[in-house]
Image (cartoon, rainbow, N blue to C red):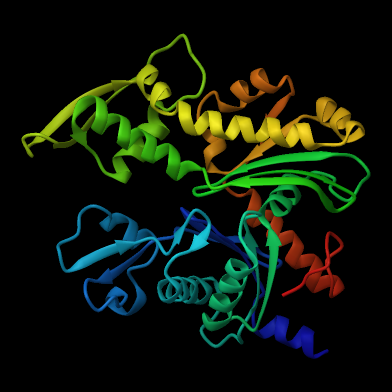
Length: 348
C-alpha cells in the first residue's frame, strides 16, 4: 500500500547515464528526457552556472564558444564518473526536470551502467544518484537493458548477442536464460571516433578542430566500409602553424582512413566475444545474428563491415540511441509491478 502511494506521488525513473547523452524514462510513460551529459561551470569556483540551468542542451550550445570565465565540462568519460559534484548536479537537474510536478517525493531510480566499470565505479554511480535526490537506486547492465529495449528474448534458452556502442564504451554480450554467458567491454566508443578525426586532421593537415566539428564530420560523412559515392564536407578550424582561421575540404574516404583504428578495435572485441561463446549458443548467433545498438552503431557501413569480418548477420536496432533507456524503463516497470524484475534480481 505504501509502495503504491509512493508511486502515485513520485514517479519512478529509469536513466541511461551516458558519456555523451543522458536519457530518462518514467515508469508507465516512456521516454521523457534526452539531453547531452554536459555542464557549464564558472572557472575557478567550479559552480554550475545560473543556478543549475546551464545543463544539457544549454551547456552543449556553449561548447567551444565560452569566454575564459566559463568552462563546459562532461562529468563522465568512458562511461565513468570523473567529476562527482558535477555529476550529482547534472543528475539532480535531470531528475527534477523528469518529474511530473515540483512536489513529488524522491523517486526510485534505476540506472544502466557499462559492463566495464569496477565495483568502486558502480558505487560512485550509486552514491551520486542518492545524493542527487533518489529514494532508492538500482543498477543494471547497459547491454542487458539494450537487449530488452530491442525486444530480444533474453529469458529464453537461446543466445541473444548485443553490441552496444556508446559515447565512451562498447559492450558486447551474449545473453541466455536471463544471464550474461559472455560479456566483454572496452573503453572505445563514439568519443574515440571523434578523437581519431581530430588527430588525423591535426597530423595530416596541420588544422586544429574541436569536438563539435569532429562529431559533425563523423555524422555527416563518416563511414566504416567503402561506398560507390564519395561525400565531401567543408570544415573550419585554426591553422596549427600560423594560428589563423582556415577552411579544409574532407571526403568520406579520408574520414574512413582516420577511423580505422577504433573501428578495428571494436571488431576485434566482437570476434573475441564470439570465440568465447559456447558452440550451441554460437550456432544460435549464426542463425539469429548480432544486434547493434548505441549511437556508435549509426556510423555508415559499420554493421555491413562487422558482418563481412565475422561472417555473422548483423542487425541495426530500430532506435539504437534509445534502446538502453527503453530497456531500463521495462526493467523498472517490471520492478514496480512485481516488486522484483522478471529479467534479473535487482540489487542496489
